[in-house]
Image 1 (cartoon, rainbow over the protein chains, first blue to last red):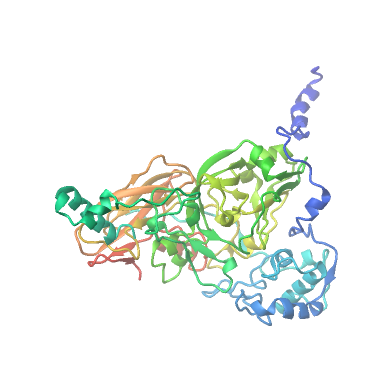
Image 2: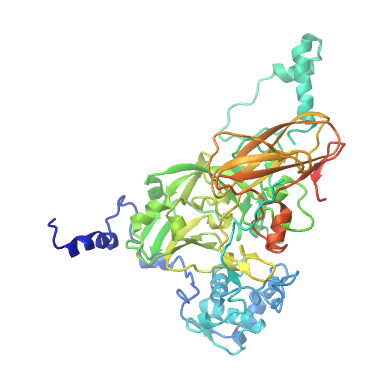
Length: 180
Length: 403
C-alpha cells in the first residue's frame, strides 16, 4: 500500500475501524426476514417495533373483561395477579402501591408486555388491534387516556405516563459500613 | 441437617467399631463392614442416597409457573450447587425446547445479522467459568420486620455453577457491531419471552452464551439449551432459553427492568438498571432451623460472594457482633463465584449470636441490615446484601435473631 499524503495516512485507521471486517469463524448464516419476523416485535420507548393497527378503550372494554379481569380484577384493581390501576401519589408514602398507572414509566412497555406475555396462560394470543385496545383500556382505567383516544404506532409512544420522571440512575455503592 | 444428631450418632458408632471390635452387636458392625448382601448393579444416570433429603423450597402460589424456588444453602458443601438444586425463577413456566429446532439470532445494529443452530454454537471456541447466579430479589424477606427463619428462605435465591459456553464478545465481533450501538436486548423463548436490556460495554466484557452446567447440558429450568450468563449482575438478566440478541442504540425499558427489578426509595424515586450484586455472605452452619447437639467444637461455615470480583476477607462473630475474627477462605478464590469460609468455634453452651461479614477485592464491606434500611428505606425490595445474625439458644436451637 502506498502511503499518500499526511491526511490519508491519518484517515486510514479510522476508516478501517468503521469498515465491516470479514467474519473470523464464518459459522451460521444470515437470517431470512421471516426468521426475524417470527421472533416477534420488541418495542422500544420511541415506538420502534410497534406494528400497524389501532384501538381505543371503548374497544378494549370487552377484551379486558374476557381476557384480563379474571386475574387482574374487573377494574384492574388486582386479584391473583398484580393491580394494574390505582396507587398514584403513593410512591413516596410508607405503603407504596406500584401499578401501571402509578409506576410504569412508558406506555410502550405496557404494549410490549401485553403482546409478548399476556394473558398469562395464553401469551401471544392477542392480535395487534386487540393489544392496542386493551392497553388503551388499562390506561383509561388509570385516567391517563380518554375512552375514545385512538392508540396506534404514532400515538402510543406520545402518551405521557404519570411516573415518567420517577427513575434515577444506580448510585451504589451507597452504604458505608460502621466498623466496630 | 447434616450437622445434627444423626451424624454424631454415626460418629459414635464408628468410634465404637474401631475400639470395641467384636464386642459390638452384629448389626452395628455391619454398618461399617458391609451388609453381607450384594449391592445394586450399575446404573445409567446417578441418584443421590435415599438418606439425603435436601430439596429446593417453593412458596405456595396460584401461578406456580411464575414463582421461585430456593437453594438449600444450609446443606451445601464447598462452593458448587448441584444443578438439581440450583435456584429457579421463572416468569412464564419452564418450556420444553428441542435443541435441534432451537435457533439464536443476532441482529439489529450489526453488519452481518446471524442465525445459529445449537450445533453451530457448539463448534465455536468455548470457555468454562465458575460463577454464582443470584436473583435481584434474593433476601427480599430481609427488608421486612419479620425476616426469613432460615438460610434457604432468606438467602437461597443464589447458586453457583460451572458454566460452559461461547463468549458473547466473540459473536459480537463476528456480526460486526455498528457505530451508534450502545445496548443489547436479550430475549428468551419461554412463554413470557423474558426480555432484558444490557449495556453493550458489559455485553462485550464477559458475558457467556452457556449451554453447559456442571459438566452436562443445562437443566431445562436453567434455560436448556442456551442461556445468557451475565457475571455479577442480577439473575433476571441471565436470560434463559435465549433466542435473540438484538443490538440497539437504546434500552427497551421492558417490564422486567422498569416495573420490576427497580428499587423504590423513600422519596418515591426508583433506581433503575441496578444490575450489580454487591458483596454478601451468610453463615450456613449454624443457621436458622438447625440445632447444636451439645457444647463442644463446631465448624462455623458459610458462603460469601460479590458481583464486583473476588472475596478478599470474611469475618465471623460468635458474640452477637461485639468482636469479629477472620475466617479461613477456601482456595482457589474465584472472582464472581461463591467462596466458602470456615471458622472453628467452641460452643460453651448458653446464648450466642453468629454472623459473617464479607469484604470484596474493591474494599467494599458488607453492610448491616440497619445501614441498608437507613440508606434505602423498607420498600426498595431488591438487592438486599446485609449481614444476617443467627441466634443460638442455650438448648442448642438456632433461629433468626430478630424472631
